[in-house]
Image 1: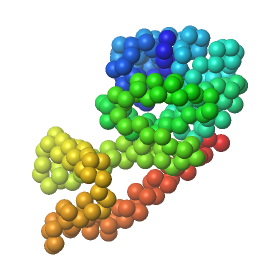
Image 2 (image 1 turned 90 degrees about the vertical axis):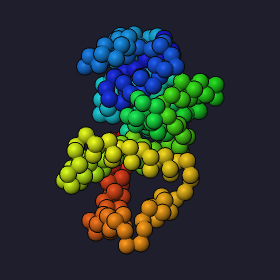
Image 3 (image 1 turned 180 degrees about the vertical axis):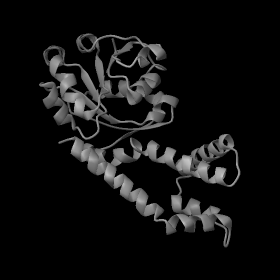
Image 4 (image 1 turned 45 degrees about the vertical axis):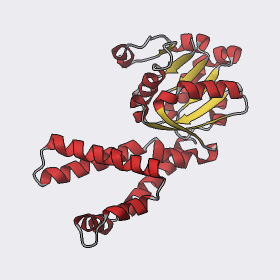
Length: 257
């Protein structure tokens, strides 16, 4: 078994869907029935610990200790690669919970990996060799963009990539609600808002221009766009978003204690 997933929640199943485009040699644990619905092989945590070359730790940070504790003897005997996506938990902390020094890859993905448009941060400890890391990144290439980040920046950077989709969905919903209030049918309003955000994001990625410059290019003097920008600024839009990211980063740090 090349990969095993301890957990198959929203994030675990999203990565499993991405990985499945490169290999079918994996299995998952799942209490919710999601694995069966997605057509993935189901097995026990003990079986994954005993046979998987690389193990995704797709459980919540507060559940990590209870998930790893019964698997400690198996992990110590085999020393597989652990791939953690738990917010706030450092690779050193994962080793402590596993009770043995192991090769560990730490990632911070987001749910759009399921559709190949994810943003995944990653780092690895010194026990992960270059060949293993390269092979893992190759298996993850269908997930979207992968970028190496120093672990000390994970708590902050992860709030943008990992938590960010929730904030974007909220913005899409708010834009659609505004359009509906102006008479646009709900279905079209949501589609217009989502497609506009997707296109605007692609402009940033492809052009490399500063978001402020791209914003200025849309704002004609005395036009409707600048009127909308002023309304957002009057409501403290940018300050609220900054506070949002900082609050999530603070919570990440708390989860690691």
